Image 1 (tube, rainbow, N blue to C red):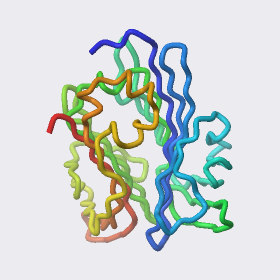
Image 2 (image 1 turned 135 degrees about the vertical axis):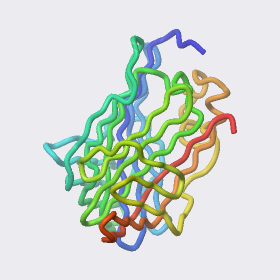
Image 3 (image 1 turned 30 degrees about the vertical axis):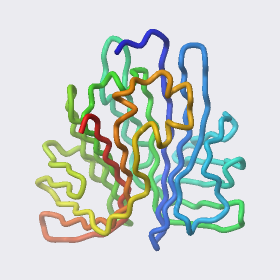
Image 4 (image 1 turned 45 degrees about the vertical axis):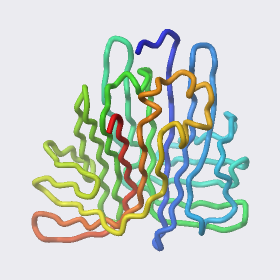
Length: 264
């Protein structure tokens, strides 16, 4: 399906998992469709975290700000403010590039020390992650059938992975700042020559069709995207990760990961 008008999406994604497994996920984006510009922010969070509004909030005032290596997000309309302090080096990659546009991924903080203060006066701290995605190609033009994404963070190690299956194949695995080729990526296991990461005790954070989840809050995006894309199923999870290196050493940490499928 062609796209006759200008499209761009610039989106921050941040998260936090406490030592006890309480999770927070935040999104802040600018969507451009032709001459219309839509700013929106929203959250997903553990029921045990109080004082936060799910959203969305349609405002440019509640956007994250990058301050050197830190990311600061003051979002009074969503009921929180947070700071992500980088613990690992950033990575920027062009995931896909054509004459008509680009999908650029900035893994701003593969691992971060994070503190979140909510409107209720509660303070939550733990390890987190932050990235920025810049798309000038509509995602429904990428020909995806399956998308895997995830991040593992512990006090010692950080891992992030992306796999696209479809018309354009993509397999990215980065461990502690080093790119690793040829990894096997699935919904519950990441395997490469250097290590195996096993995902256990999975908890579903969100599950539903794309038209029923986050994008459902943005009517203009619903009108623009084709039905086949909106029918894709998004599943987002929290798991406990067990990281076993080739030398036998073991590390554990929290994992947030997702699987999106189309036409299945």
